[in-house]
Length: 115
Ligand SMILES: [Zn+2]
Image 1: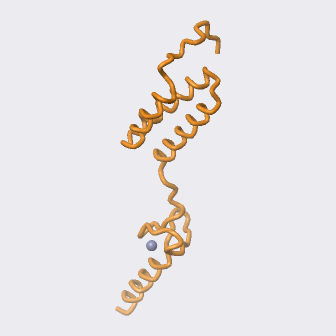
Image 2: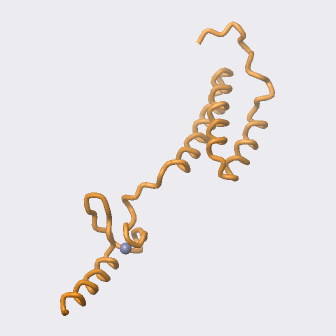
Image 3: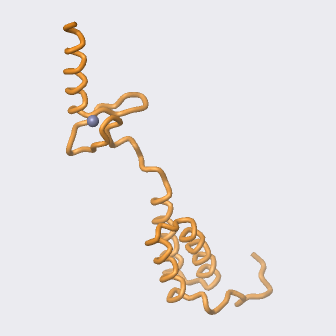
């Protein structure tokens, strides 16, 4: 990126300033604000060639993305929501079911069979 204004990144954008702002946004679950702050931090520290701060910014961005992303549903029962090791799971094409829910459904279906 050609930049005739090298050093144009405001000096006030230091880790000491940016980190508490990011932490506040993250703790208040304002993840989109935190994401933008992480991106701004990354750009600022890249301009300054601060490797450690760049890495910290990437970790901050990843923490935000982890919180914004839907949880993978592959590891919990689609019926009761419990997860291993509390239950054992069986997988269907788009759902999972645990051993407890299988037992419950078995009992339910047996009752309806005896009618
Ligand atoms: Zn279940």
